[in-house]
Length: 157
Image 1 (tube, rainbow, N blue to C red):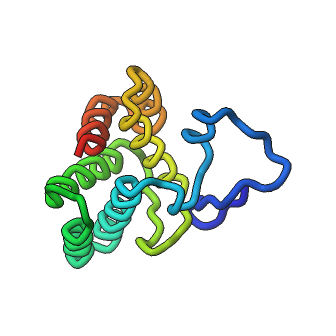
Image 2: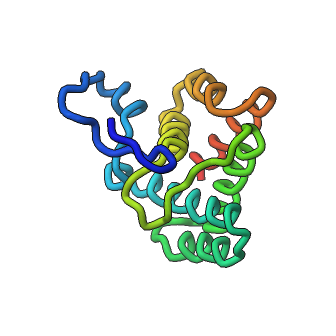
């Protein structure tokens, strides 16, 4: 697999082993286009929120709310932004380093974004116990319950 700044991920190189369908869905980094509409919206919100934290610019928060407002089929855009922000905030507080987000228009995903999409996919699949085990690998000790609640709340939005 090829990686560059922030550990962004591109398609697998030829000759790499293939996994089963569920393993592939959960472990293989994909392009933004391969996600469903809800996941793409959530990813964009993560990116706007990440930019707000990185720059301190309030325009990034406004862009997140405007993006959610303009997205079809979102019943409560402010709640969606708040839940995405809550998850990012919990994840930022649980680890020693900052999360790495690509710009909102980028088609590739950073390693952190890939993990966020994985968390969201597992939460939306509603497989008991799976989410907790993945969250434990992603957040620091003591933040697992809060992160699990936050990703579940976002997945149900």
